[in-house]
Image 1: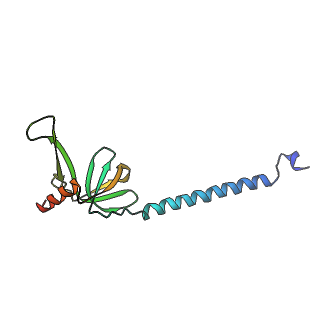
Image 2: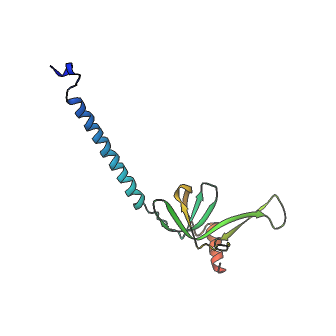
Image 3: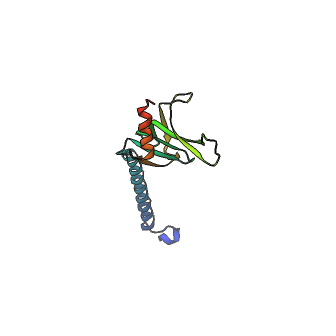
Length: 142
């Protein structure tokens, strides 16, 4: 009896399949290793004292990136902008005020944010409006 009469194919085709599966497994392992190694070694570096962090819900915070890992970024010395009606009572104009976090009931001293909630992080120039307002807040002891 030959291999055709028993329904078996030659040994070359299954061997090629095993080699292809092994190559795919190796490539997936390499990709997984690179992905996990890259997430821990890609540290954020900024050359300004403060950073702006825009979240997916539209809120923006300004603070110092204190630490990071593959899932979270932690900000310290955090500020945000509160918008409200102008003191003159004109409903057409708004007044924006920079507020230091920490005065809330729970008095937070830092903010840890899930990376999935972050749209972007940018440096805040010390000469920008926000940078100057933070300096003014610091000089008042806030």
